[in-house]
Length: 464
Image (cartoon, rainbow, N blue to C red; front, side, top):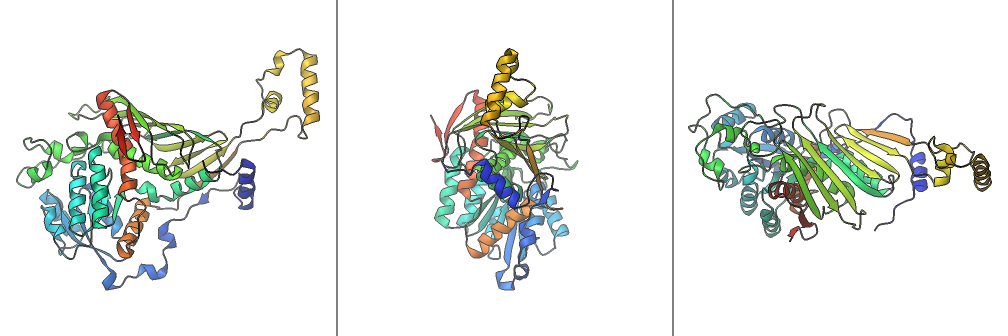
């Protein structure tokens, strides 16, 4: 275990930096703000030719974000729905090469890097094909649909020496960087529990995506969409709402838990849990889907170099009447770090010695004694302690918020393209990406098989 600073040392540092309670929330700094002027102008020879494979909702968001990074140009796109390819040309420019066959995009010499934002069952195959074609890859989460594909992608990246960044942007988020800094400083004492939730309360949040009334097999290449998935007749519901089906997606864990694991593993420098147990069910969205819309999973983390053993409770609810929320709490013996989409709050509330608690709390054990015994105890305490009788250490609270318009996805792409241009390591390579995806996939296995699963987070293998 690494040695942590004592709380007293931490408070001295906080006071010296002006971080004491009562100040306005501190504003964190993004990579966009720290980009050097010389990095904003890229020569023609250093421009990166980008292609997007899968131009659905996230594909467009990723592409829009990637093109904000200086020196990146969209040159090609692939999708199995013809209308999306038409939209690419309308929205970006008419010269973008488009194809329903992603292999035609990979064969182009003007493509240096690809964004892969397709249904989960295609992730491993397309990523490996792209790296073997000499392309660097930004692969949307989860990295793989099945556990057995994780090492295949890792091995392919090592064998081809290409850059692969998994697109779970919490790894680049300044909020989680700050949480990591605070945790490592010893600000919350000894960690004992983490609570994480990613709830939603909207039709789109529950993957009820719109379906074009004229969608047909004439403009959708259904066989290419299916790939290795079980054969079925053309079904536009399955095509446009693929996340609802085990054949193509990974349900709540693969879509949302993987983000939470990315954040947890980053803050704690952890390789992941040692077991998983999940429960849930289809509680509200009875629309033909075969994955739960409510999921609760419990994980155990063993003691490691960077953290003690602790319990993780993780949940997602797609009919959350409270409004839907993404939130973390890292809970320790002397405080808690709370994280949400807009920032971070740390509360420090250290444990007091029993004698002090008996003197200052409304409920105590001393009051059950006769008065002479109480008075004797109080007098002895006064003699042994310099602090006034009613002195108590109040909880301290500080807040940090992100800059207006902050987008951690942009920071994640900045890191990716730095890797592409300079051949330097990225923050979420396949090993990091798999260590976020694997425990999420364990939740699916546990839910399906109604049993606990063991996991070796270092070897990244099931424990039988």
